[in-house]
Image (cartoon, rainbow, N blue to C red):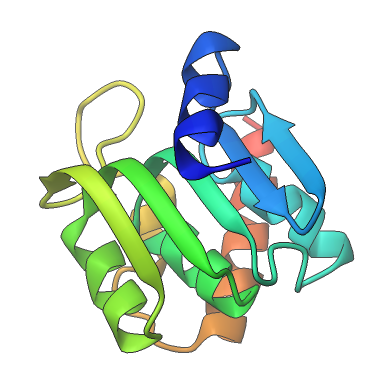
Length: 140
């Protein structure tokens, strides 16, 4: 599939993420970073050399995808901190809208995942912190 086909699939099938990983198409309707972090708990390189189309890429998602050695990312919304990570790791990307930061679901502040990794630079540290934060939030 090409990028346009992946984008159409995301929009037509009401998905939150579509990734082409070699000959496999991975899709998810989960919210937040769950579509990325859940498979990465089993295989840190799950998205290695993948083309990822996602609705929102914040710093947390960018760090996860950098750790997983993604090839290319297309985001409808990209945060400035995410762009810094993608540039630092020389990951190709495009986006429609650049945001100062990713907002939380009730639009009262910063996304808790973006906040968790806001000042982090180490990708492995970020993965551990995000797994911990995901577990914390799931208990609410």
